[in-house]
Length: 417
Ligand SMILES: Cc1cc2nc3c(=O)[nH]c(=O)nc-3n(C[C@H](O)[C@H](O)[C@H](O)COP(=O)(O)OP(=O)(O)OC[C@H]3O[C@@H](n4cnc5c(N)ncnc54)[C@H](O)[C@@H]3O)c2cc1C
Image 1 (tube, rainbow, N blue to C red):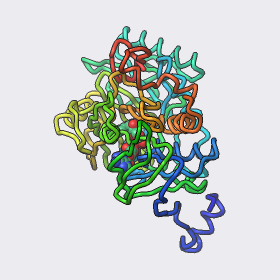
Image 2 (cartoon, protein in one colour; image 1 turned 180 degrees about the vertical axis):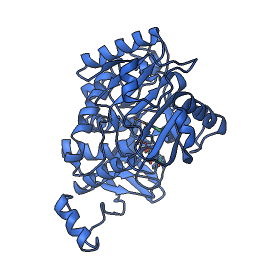
Image 3 (cartoon, protein in one colour; image 1 turned 180 degrees about the horizontal axis):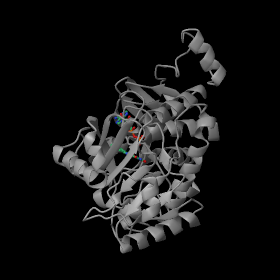
């Protein structure tokens, strides 16, 4: 079933009785060419691009819960291509281009909104770093505009420009940055993959990865054994646990990241605003809620909820930047599990086990990477060669130190990546 204005009108006038399920609910087959563990954004996008780009349809996505129940449905929805480091910048640039054609391609409204991302700076040194970052973005073919204090004030008059500790000096505007509806991205890719014959199997937890003679044979799941020539681990915050089923110890730590949303308000923020010095960022959803968050909770955990001191820290940063926010009531907060790598960049690679592949280490930036990650992993699975845009996301960089994306070990800092 295709979606279009005529269809909407017809269904609206006839009681919405004609809609069909958006994907099938197949029983797992005994064997597939490729099994993808994890029905988040990256796993579903991989399945879609395997079918679309490479004609591989004997593929299953195994999800232990429901599609979109992981981080893809828990993030704060920011989509941007403002990475400066070679290796990362071309990848995220490719991703943003894929985002820009995604709704038409999937025939699904993922509510991609390029409302502009405004990254504030508070000192001369910081401005210099932002100028360098902006130049790197422009060299990559993306967009960046330096705003002075008055230009920021024109756009964001409600900010506190004279905060004693963080007076606002200006900002770097990334006009093509913005947001997308997070779970709609999962649903859009799921529907498109299902239509191309991929089996999406929910409530199917992988409990073992079967390896014989250094070669993957398939997986053991709560719904039986499934054989496969190739298996990809695409389980984000659970990557370390799932890889351990094959005897691998990954250079990944799992940490909680929290997000918060207020009651619905009239439109006030029409950009994404980043206050890096305060570890804070905010945007407004189409429903009116202010959506915001901060830094990691700071300790390894698999709990999908966070601690109160971090919540307090985030609220303090909100008040320092934008005192008006104190009048809004926080409606909900939640957490997701981040797969953090030591150099803050992801892994899309083969493992030492034949037929076993890895897509992980997305830190807190994997939502925007969804299309390009799926595209690159599908390419790797189909051809056994890395895609050009993801050639540096190798696993062995952590063993020998060669090709580390961030050789100074500064970690997952957005400005530096
Ligand atoms: C609060 C928060 C804010 C964030 N904000 C942003 C943002 O603004 N912009 C951005 O780019 N990124 C952001 N991120 C990061 C982003 O959401 C993640 O990096 C990305 O979603 C991870 O990829 P995924 O969608 O495939 O993960 P997931 O959706 O977590 O998918 C992994 C799936 O694997 C499944 N799984 C795990 N173990 C098994 C098993 N044994 N068997 C079967 N299935 C299994 C899980 O159930 C899950 O559905 C944020 C994350 C959080 C939590």
